[in-house]
Image (cartoon, rainbow, N blue to C red; front, side, top):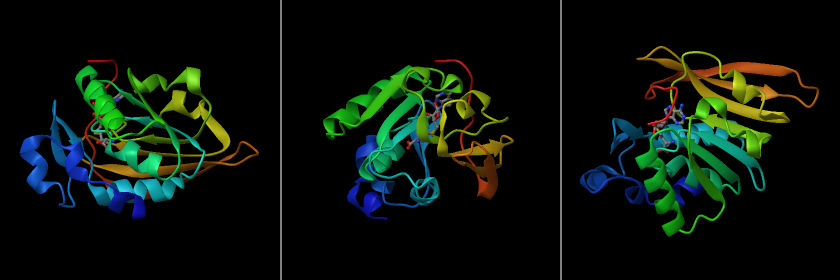
Length: 186
Ligand code: SAH
């Protein structure tokens, strides 16, 4: 909650959305994409238990808001965005705001970020239709990963805990609605 409170969400939305920035709902950020609802950002960040010094992979940079929350929790964030224009504007925004521990890359998140793997935490902020196989391979043991999984209109938020032994524990947390995860870049 402190990390959320310290952020000004209006700095992450387009000019015509600024008047709604304090509302607890998703908002359009262009290219058919959205900045997530603050409650969901807080919920996912808490479930992930991202903390100081951890390497975190985010798939779906969007506005950069979720990445900024993770950075404020002390994490070193690597974020991948498939839409070039959004990757560029989020990267510029985060740099202007002084976030030095966030790296944004334009690319297809389906492949993760192999050069920077492994990650202690992985968060996917677009709705997956099936299990993110490649990302499991980039998760540390112990590690935690959270992602929305399901159909187009509704998904379940899934939390996977990987123990040091390498075994997995999987939990369904709550129903959510995210914009779709799409393969390839744009
Ligand atoms: N975390 C963002 C919310 C992003 S909305 C925020 O805090 O603002 C989901 C984002 O995932 C969109 O920007 C969409 O373009 C992106 N996305 C969808 N499929 C992707 C993929 N295969 N790789 C990377 N990003 C993807």
